[in-house]
Image 1 (cartoon, helix red, strand yellow):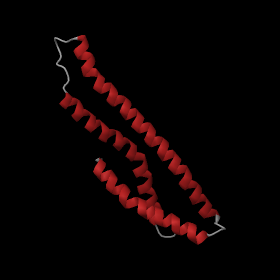
Image 2 (image 1 turned 120 degrees about the vertical axis):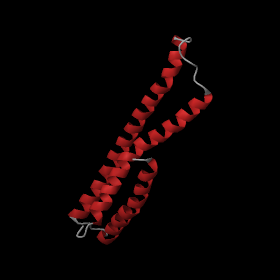
Image 3 (image 1 turned 180 degrees about the horizontal axis):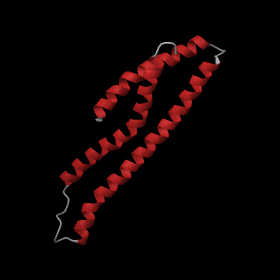
Length: 126
């Protein structure tokens, strides 16, 4: 899924989830019900889990991007007669694409949880 589509879905889901949860907290007041406490606990746990998952995904994507970037340089150093030197233009294009893929990997777990919460909290009776 493209980064633009993920961003759009996240931008649509987040206000719904925030609105629902803030309304639930306001209605609960100083004595939240068991259901309210469960939802607030779930909110905290999901945020931590999504954050850890996002950082792990971005770190792994960055690691593999560095590996792929270093390979042409290593080929050129080991076999200069068989490989051409990477250019500044190719490196610039590569890192632009790599940055988007790293960001995309970080967006996936956050978007997935936000969209799922928007669907779950948007159902009647919740």
